[in-house]
Amino acid sequence: MSQISITSDPATSDSQYPADMLPVTILSGGARLFGVMYRPQGAGPHPALLLLHGFPGNERNFDLAQFFRRAGWSVLLFHYRGAWGSDGDFTFQHVLEDTAAAVAWLRSDAARTEYRVDASRLAVVGHSMGGWAALMTAAADPSLDTVASIAGWNIGMDMSMVDEGDVPRQVMLPFFDESAERLRGASGAALLDEGLAHVSDWNLVNHAPALAGRRLLLVAGERDDGTPPPVHHTPLVYALEKAGAKQLTHTMIASDHSFNDRRITLAQTVVDWLPAV
Image 1 (cartoon, rainbow, N blue to C red):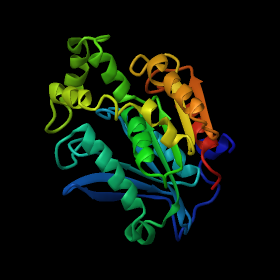
Image 2 (tube, one colour):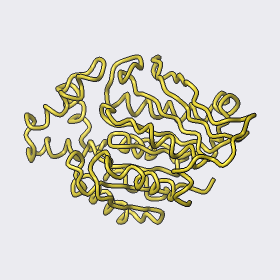
Image 3 (cartoon, rainbow, N blue to C red):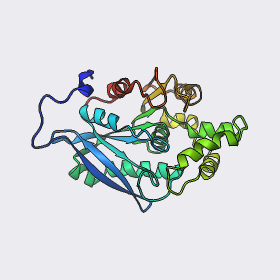
Image 4 (cartoon, helix red, strand yellow):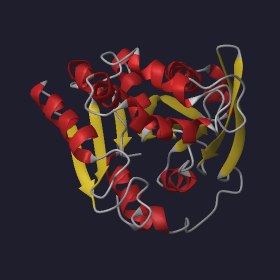
């Protein structure tokens, strides 16, 4: 895919099927999850890309959604329960359930007929906690075969360091407190306790065998002090390679956790990895 595909507008516009952005409401656990679908021009059906934000989602990557749409993908970006106006209370378990609900919605008749989605071509791309959710969801759903994690936060790995005493609870708690202020029904202590109750099953390294057969992309930021690569990226790469992953692409970009000074590089990295449209 050439650089111009994501940094230039189309040479012509389709007047019958123009590019547009449509509101989306997804039900998960009885709660309404609010989101938007960025739909490319053309009659379609278009391949679908589920774009997952992090914790709490200060960076929601709307610019990446625009980039991926220009590359020909219908991009769904939604908010988990308790985040940014969606119904319900925020928990990490709800994040996993909500991600599975979004995948199911993309495969629904409504998505196919009303949004012109081709769910047979589905990619899941997540940033930070969204990267964890993307990989956890794929580990539980063998039909998801194209998954990317950007500056992925391996929650189980962080929790193991607290559980084993390498990082004191009081050192980790302020981070959870700060994010919980932006999330409905959440407290830093409750979220930390939830993570500590799932030390093993939420550690992505332990899911490497289930993920090894997928088409995977792991992107890390060299200067990322939120999810430092030696803790969250490199051990997962090693575990996947040890598990026999043959379709694993992994790379480092000279930037921070949100790739603030390398957004074009980040977008191009993902677009180049995505299957051809």
